[in-house]
Image 1 (cartoon, rainbow, N blue to C red):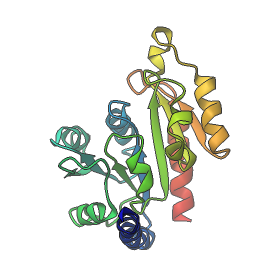
Image 2: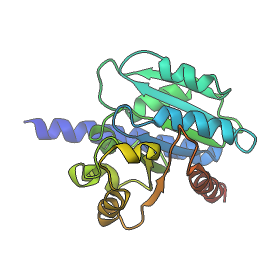
Image 3: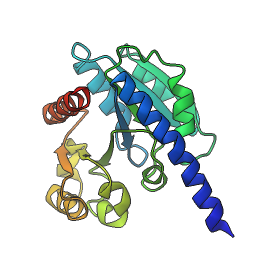
Image 4: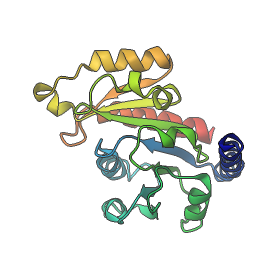
Length: 218
């Protein structure tokens, strides 16, 4: 009896996601769905990106969390537009929530919209939110077998950032093993070892963003 309910939820989400895709296409906005487990470094990555690329792009962030507006405040401190969605226990953002949040943003002239999803390696991968690309972060403190254990998220992501590489001397994590697992699921995934804290490896990520933005604009 649950199967029709689940199908209806996914179909309803997909319909609104299609509406968002049309909206972002009309406005020429590159929309990125940023996913990871809690604490992998999504907000820190956004702080670095929003600050370093502020002179190149107009950017905004939709923040998804169960509670608090802590991350939205951190993002807003960079000068970027930020809207907080509190899911009140929900494990992922829905396209309807993102559409409502977009109404709180000034989309005119916006180049890139980051949608920071709820920290979770499972549910966010199952719900499109109108994005052009899904981006996954995996920190080296989590274990290099996560792509093998949670395959869907890595299979459908365009890019994988292996974050907190400054901690590699202190943890049992193989960049090569994690990358190979991810590429075994998705041969086209781009892998970027980075340390947001130490500001290492971010140039390759920024170049990918520039190319993705140019492709959307074109």
